[in-house]
Image (tube, rainbow, N blue to C red; front, side):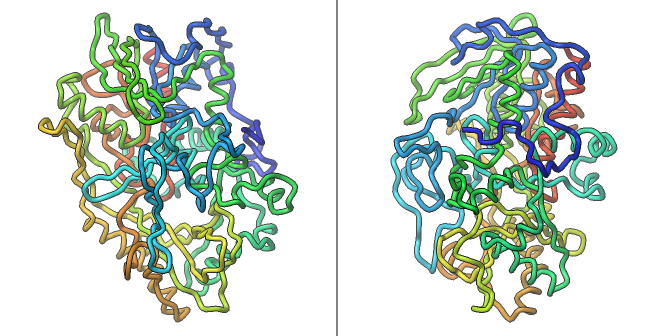
Length: 540
């Protein structure tokens, strides 16, 4: 599946770093190979493991790699599929324009973020299947999450943004910024294979006409416009445009996975972790309980699933240490359930709190006929409009890859929304609930308007009202960037150790209190690098 196994293009964002740092450099020794039993998967009922990692997204992948490099055997539990086998069409993933059963997690109808076009609904019926994108619905919001080995890296646009240094104290106030910017952000960028589009190619290719229109209009209204790094292989994309390789980003592949050019975690951290010989992964397995066992260990109950989402087996294993890395929502829901049911009674009252949507809100604008955005659009965004300091918004200039000329500019904004929600356990229904309210999106809308009202006024244009419903301007019903729920320094100590239960750790986006000012996965990765460094040095 990998077209660039090294994970670093010739335009590497961090010059001279190479690929991931080796175990000898990090920990001063070469770990021994694991026993065959440590590699066997799926995990067996009654197994005993040194480290169990719940989830295979950014935080979990960092933890697995660094633990393995330190000589610890790791078993990763992943609710989604492995996504390593092509279907009958020869592809692992389907395209945005042709969603099939591979597209959504256990739904019988698609639920696209942009679900109307020209005022008509565009969702369609699909067979129920353990597809790659989960549109999880709560009372006031739909949260989009990746399902599969690689987590959110499978379904995001790959925009790999390090926050501005001056914004960091508001993101993670208890974390040393010098360490993050001198050590852990560079390490994360290197490990993820971050690079930036060639500006000359960007200016000449038809595939980024939509982004050049966004640049022109932002600059005409006095807003800073910036190139944004990404984890796509830009050399591969140039070859896509030249017609010398199979098209991927230029064939409408993004939301439901990307078959070739994107450097998902499968090609970077997870590939390196597996190469240590100490990491096994069990796809289609879901952790339902974690509770204390004798000797300071933990009993973990795991359901094995089939591709219809039905439980085919229930397994009980023991682990010396457990790392919660199921994503902000998955980790928060599990911890709130474990506290509510008494399985982990010593968790503190901060579990479930501090959850936010990274201020996500979407909108579209209708351009004049002299500003076409192009029938051919790359699905990988590579630029943004920065009005964070003045208006509290950073807007990604997003593609609208319909295959026809739309004369539309489309944006995903990240805003300084102050609202935070809480997950709670409902004993009556046996479910975890989230108290987010759609009305809490209004600050995000107001902040996004500081950009787009001004552009519309300058250009003499209007908002599109046909993309999110009938006469509806704002996509205020969703988030791509869930954060918080087990906040660092509150539900955990300052390195992700869960209060009240030694040997349990949170190492994903649940640690970050609701906002990162930019796309969050580089910060999640860098924070995981920082925390696992400390845990390996002091707890092992």
